[in-house]
Image (cartoon, rainbow, N blue to C red):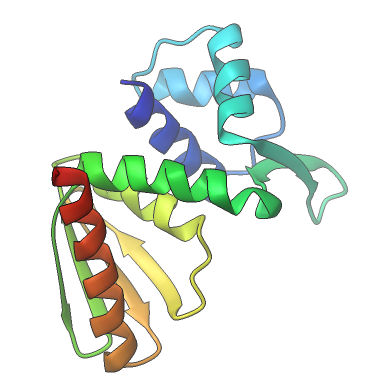
Length: 153
């Protein structure tokens, strides 16, 4: 449950400008996660979320760029809990997930800011990554499949 909640938090902050813990708590509740303010506070700390300035002069939560090792660990956890299969066609990587988990896995992947990934798009059980070339797509698939096989051991 915690992994899914963390994935949902990453998805929310990647898609919505969230300024306060109370706002994040409300959005989580709307998504079906009945959480307390203390839980939200712990999640923010565990995910190492930071407040960054926005265009309107306010602040919103985002992933910490300096904590890539923590984000990477969180990605591996979400990825291994969510992903069923990975394949590519030309420069598009297709990631098949458990029903309802594609957006969370996609948001976690986005948080890694991989330079060969131009953009991503998530549905309910599948997300795609558009990468710079077919060669990059093949390499990304190999890396993602290696992560899947490492977690199955």
